[in-house]
Length: 455
Image 1 (tube, rainbow, N blue to C red):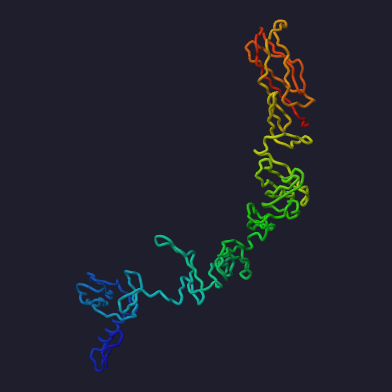
Image 2: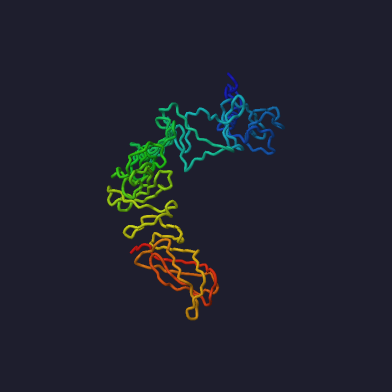
């Protein structure tokens, strides 16, 4: 009969053995040390000065003192002396100093192997599908000094690699490459029916989906704008698409808010008067649901660079256009129709009779600085006067109202002037002085009044 067990070397009680209790107690003592093994430290090298009963150390490759020559063994302090035990591969021990579990291998004590696990649950139970399960308020994946990437890999384009967001374990949103290699964002109200809100094509990078306008006239609230198709609507300003329908009036009920790449109009005072002009338009919508539009011509001719604002009397009626003023038409021929300005804002001009500036409000100023009179010598009481001078205005005033005229003579003895006759086309006046003036006297004249009656 052998003297001890094969694995733990527990001493056996032999037949006819005296003091059998000693052998039994020795075996119990060994079991007490090795079952639920806890060591004070791994790779220990120096014995403690005052070890406690039953404490165990896992020795390293070069222990010293009382442990010398016991490399890689377990040293246990029992009844005032050291007991050394050879650990076997597969034993598990908890290191009190390291606060870690290690397993004995042929090479020594090593942490448990974590590769190729069938599953792992952290505060949760894993299963065959969810082989990693975590139940926690948050999960942190951080960098190790620089970048950090979370990689989700699938086998083939027809498979799915995605992030799924759930409520009560029922899907509500998903993003990733689902069923193909295009990136998509999907949502679901119940976990059964899914809506592809956005999809980005891998080959082109273009965006589609239920959250994007279906076509150029799709006005579904909440959808994203898209470039124009056939040059109309959908905020497609600047599109390289072919020109669309020729007349903005032809859009009829389809005239929805957006950018229109190509318009023409034959309506009077419209972006295209007479022969149609191609251009662009921004279509708006008012509170009355009657669309309005800004339009400008597509032309390199400065004379035809015009900007208009138009609206409709009804939702589908003809456009009513008003030309807007800008630096291209601020100056020009002013005109009116029915008391409303129809031309430029300011009209400057000049001729041999001086300079003038007409305004769209109906007001006009005329000036002349090169009039003159020779000799102010005719006595008239206590003053002297010149011969009559007539100034024909460079532009006629409104016939029903004479302008206000101011005359100044460039001479220190001149004290004023008197008007002999005044009309909407000319004024005749005399220079007054307190003494006779010999030679030529320069005269500056100004006239202000209405060229048109806005009332």
